Length: 255
Image 1 (cartoon, rainbow, N blue to C red):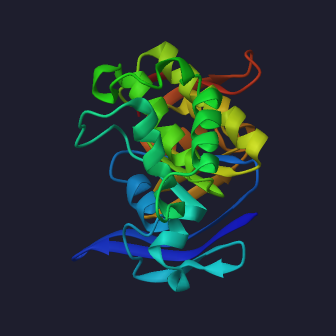
Image 2: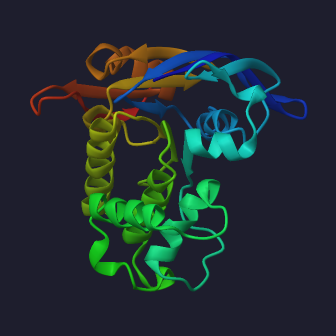
């Protein structure tokens, strides 16, 4: 599987946000989108998911141009995970994940749908709370449910918008490690918009720096997570060490 993003441009009214964004993602790969607030991370995810219509460029997955693919089929190709649950209403965790099967449902929920839901709950470590009310579990557990719902779509690509923004340290590590494992095992791809450079370094195969509407640099964490890049993109002086097995960033202060 290959996702090809070519020359994507987008703006809100008279404000340009993305200009000539070109990148590719392959099976089993986790890509982290990083950059300062307003750099277009969320907008790019929504363009890929077709929640926003780009003003130019193309998005091709498995040879299919998404301009020619209907919403139901796009939902089978890509799963979108927002920052947090919105419009929370009383339902069980099982039923919340079941929503991910909607692109496949016809007259009702079949045995295969239930099997996939149960399997996905197991992958995310949620099987023990399948019958618990979704609106009564913690924010970290809700985030896992949202990822499970997206996985239940059986997508080729997962798109996650700041999946750790409201989580404590333990849940950040649990969510990203589980996501990384699921991506590798299922041979799908994931694109994550994330603020924390150290989490991006640890859990991604590739980091894409966004700045001033463009891709500033992209590549493996060790190649692009440099003092010069962080200074140029964020305006912050940092020290970077590799003692933990991946680049670790420690901020010193503004330039």
